[in-house]
Image 1 (spheres, rainbow, N blue to C red):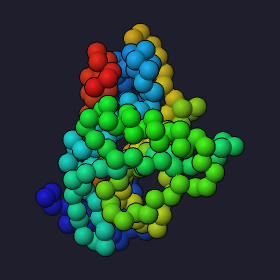
Image 2: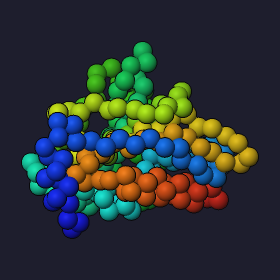
Image 3: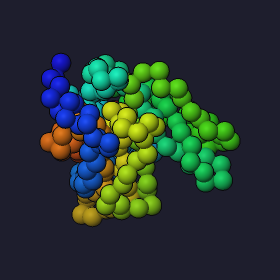
Length: 207
């Protein structure tokens, strides 16, 4: 496992140990072929976030009671707009099989759209990644709340409004994570991998 003991010891002394970086992802237009195939673009991005997270070793690290673990499986927890335009939550397991992931996403989407109560899932493990989508905003920064002050070892990924130009799509993407586990270099690697995965979906959006 990656040794981050020195970095964890340093940032353990901080009241707010999170690093939060926003950038612009730029890739070939994956949105148009996805829509033509009947695939919600957010489902395509959500799956790409999961794959990129699993492909970047530092994005798999988690911290619980000062002990480091490495994610072997991943659960995607993401925000949704439920009834009365209020915030709610959805949770589905990540699988490399996009068709299986899409089926789970679509089934859960119908439940989420009609949910009244908050759909909260107990965090019995750290095998999560938190994702939020703000399709109305080209944000330049974002700050996520933390469940317990200083507990930010589950990465938060936010994406914003798509821009379309000359056969390409760009959008804001921000990553917030525990600086004891992740540095700016690893966030840059994650965003680069996210762009690569989305570019792969252009020719065959169904896989």
